[in-house]
Amino acid sequence: MQTTTQQTLPLRLGITPWHMSGAMDANALCTQAELAEQCGYHSFWLPESHFAGPSSVPEPILLLAAVAARTITIKLGTTSYLLPIRNALQAAEQVAVLDQLSGGRLILGLGRGFEKNMLSAFHVDPKEKRELLNRNLEVMKAAWAGGVVGSEAIGAVMSPLPVQKPHPPIWMAAFGPKALAQAGKMGTPYLASPMESLQQLKENYAIYNAALEQSNQPRPSEIALMRTIFISDDKALCEHITRGLVYSASTLKFGNTAMEAAWIVGDAEHVASKIQQYREQLGMNYLIVARPRIKGLSPQCAEHSMRALAEVVSRL
Image 1 (cartoon, helix red, strand yellow):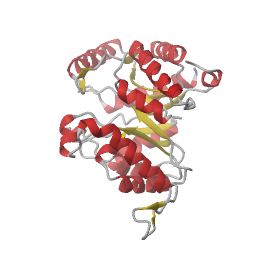
Image 2: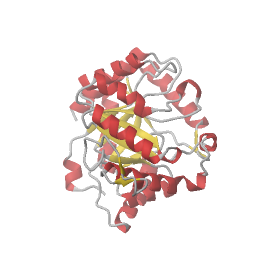
Image 3: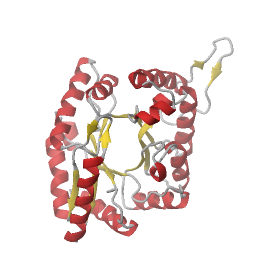
């Protein structure tokens, strides 16, 4: 699966916020992004989630607009901007505005959504979500290209257009064979789930690569993974984190499928060896780090881990 080009690409490092509050504290969010930029992280990512209580992130584009004002070089990404629940033209405008505000730093990671309560609330038939994503993205691309939208007689043209041409990079979060095949047919980089085993990821990439070949799509240069990572020399703390992740994995479901345990927890040497394993066996060249969602983990511990990880990756 690896190519010479992919093997020689340096490992780029992205991160999601390590401290999120239901209060949506803009200063706290932006401070984390500023620190990630200072530590050498390539990108700062936000997920999207609805009706999940304090952990909900219903408008990642809006939150990243705040981050854009407080950062300079770090890329701003969405791990799962949900197109099936949105008006295509309004979404195209929001994306273009954020790309303008950030000076062309947006990476648009798309998702379909899987939670039944969310899809039901937005009146989306789960059987239609993949087609809705395709249809909405086609409308958005036409709008970003400066084409006429809506009635030809009226001749409406979207403004502003994105800084990046023809549009911001589009990635695709995917879980399950149908979603993987869709990502491959579209030729977008595939953003792997943070809760699948290495063996499952190998199988996923086989499906994705087959879809790329069948659709005559060039293979994207980015081989991206999301992983939950925590670094500490404190063995007791690492054991506590691991127990919490085991419990979360046993209760969390993605659609109707129980998610597998997949995380990297330990000291710097252990984490470095695991990262190298993903690089050697999958060709990974883009790692997006998710925080352990464990009660009682202090923001200070999480911050120490993210600083340590930046140092580990800089030596790989």
